[in-house]
Image 1 (spheres, rainbow, N blue to C red):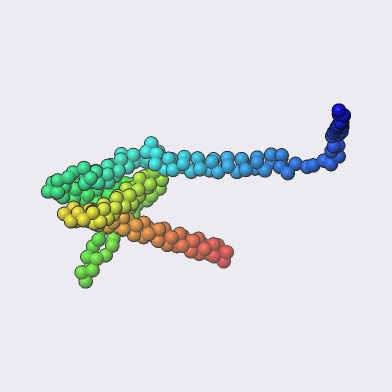
Image 2: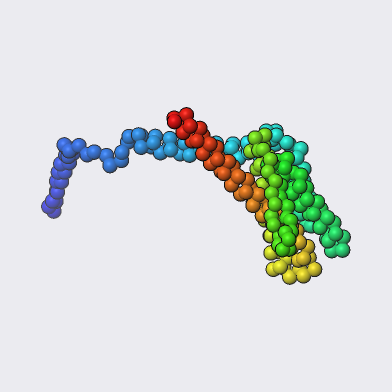
Length: 224
């Protein structure tokens, strides 16, 4: 019996790599450093803005810290009373008295102390209302006093506006007139001080123009 033998010869030779392939990935870190630096700068700017915001409401830096606290309490107490007090009969007179006290205190006293402004309304001969303004020197008032005062006016008005909307859409008919009254008082105070500030800026601009004209006249007299 014949036997067939099969011989397999496998010759495996490694291929020589002669080409140099450049990597597709940019291994340099310059652009990553630039991105990191930009991110770090943005974080520093954001941190600086937060620190500035904290400084603006830093009560220790206020020129009149007790008046700032008084304005904050007078603005907060009526709203807290409105939220916590559930009895309609007692809530109406108490909240209105507290809100009226806040209105008068900010309009007649705290406005002069914190921002040097006061407003009131007079009736002329024709029976028409006329806005009157009183301004004082604001050299001693600082940013903290101003931020506290305007924050009380603005956020107090927004609070009562939200309460009005909540009672309106909640169909709370018996409660709705109360936040409306408080909202009108807050909005009137905000409008009065806003007009007063605008009038004060107009007076300052007019004074600067008059001083500039006086300076030009003096220069003209000297040059003659």
